[in-house]
Length: 450
Ligand code: TRP
Image (cartoon, rainbow, N blue to C red):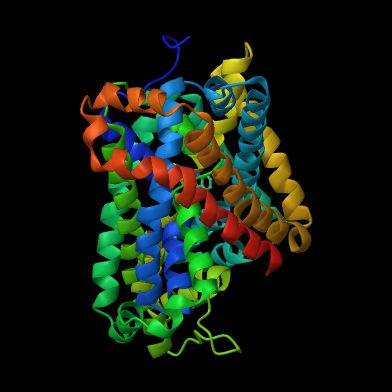
């Protein structure tokens, strides 16, 4: 079977693909605004600590299991389970990941569709087609369905190509594009009047906020979502890594890239908000907090671009292009989870599986769009607040308690013969066994009760 499976053709190919999965709307949209409303640099500090001490070990659990099994999440977890009961638990965890990844994609595609619509609106604006531009930014069912479908078609198109000719090839093209675009935008926004006020808010920590449980919970949730953990995405990408590679190092690089891009996005979004304020755009809610989430992206920023005239349309074009690229390298990693399982457990071809599952998920997106008020928020919090941490907990359980420690070390030694003497091996086993599950559980209970 392994001869038929795809594999990343190079180290950098894997790093770009996994970082592409990790870097998405969560980094550019979620992180900066959460930082803004949670004490600026204090949030940044907590986020950095949690990302390295909790999210990185959880990421490693997925990568190691995946590389060991060279198989989809269901087969992989069944394979490392020591007995019949834990085999069933493994199949259930893998299967739940299949469903949760599909549900995350169903709402992600809706949001990503808006990004494409705003990208085209900026082009229409530049071409002088006002009416078209207005239609593109208006929240209507036809527009939402059209662009969700378009985004899903792009995602399916890449996944049909397979691991090296689809995921890796496109990540290699899109990730450098994303980085260059982001750097250019940050550079430009920082030159504008008002930007420095935003920078101060971002970089001066409000230490009072540091110890609030709310802040810690938001930061951990953000770190988990940002590293694409819990649903088997990273497990599946790990299963395409060659046995020669040193896993802890690769995982560390992916974590670093993900964090750096989130931090860099903060240098764009917060200064931009205060530039908007300087230009007369309202950036505070009635309660006095900074406007965040969808209102920020689809109201404050477009209003800012509007105040900048022609340049504004140009900047809007670049910004929404960046968002679309970031979303696409993430969405392919979500679709790969159900596709990998389907092609490895049935006779269905990759092309058919990608198209069929893509169509099914589009139907779910359509159902969400038809009942937007009720379903959108529900699916988002069901998957990201509850399912993701819970499944992350299960992966730690498998790696820390059920899988034999010697087999883990053996797996690590394939890519680095000295793995037994590294700092990673001194710390990580205890982390996945005790620290990660305990903290995930604590946070889960807190969000259940709060
Ligand atoms: N990490 C991505 C972001 O920051 C989103 C993402 C990709 C994801 N794959 C995932 C989230 C799997 C949860 C599970 O936007």
